[in-house]
Amino acid sequence: MGIIIISTYPDKRSVEKIANTVVTKGLAACVNYTKINSIYSWKGRIEKPVEFLALFKTTARSKSLLKKEIAKSHPYQVPEIAEMRMGQVNAPYRRWLEESTRKGIAKK
Image 1 (tube, rainbow, N blue to C red):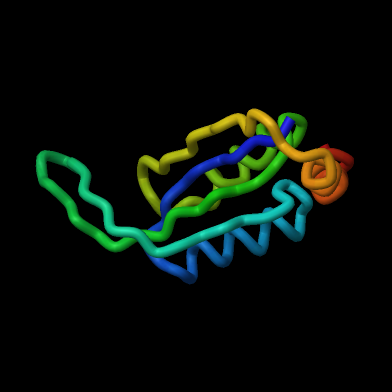
Image 2 (cartoon, rainbow, N blue to C red; image 1 turned 135 degrees about the vertical axis):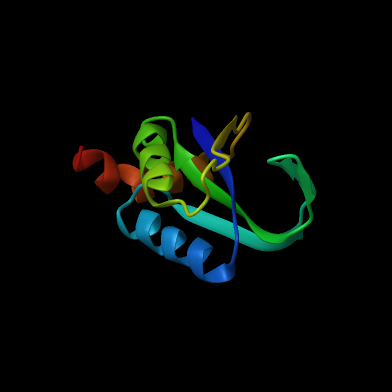
């Protein structure tokens, strides 16, 4: 099953660093990221930063290792690490996800 892990990052450098790491390690097949504007409450204040939203594409078998890697390296004190299951995924894309993350599973 395909899984998308969602997180936000403070800048392009930090999101590119984790994206390179997890794809190289085979924990994610792909990471999409884009600049976004956010509004949230933090320590009694309303914050309005520009952030980078990252979508980590992985499999159910690799998601735990991926989440640990994100948590270990994340620059935020309280990082968002949210999981979404991909409902229907076309077979060729699913196979690619599985093949691309297989080496991350092998390193367990």
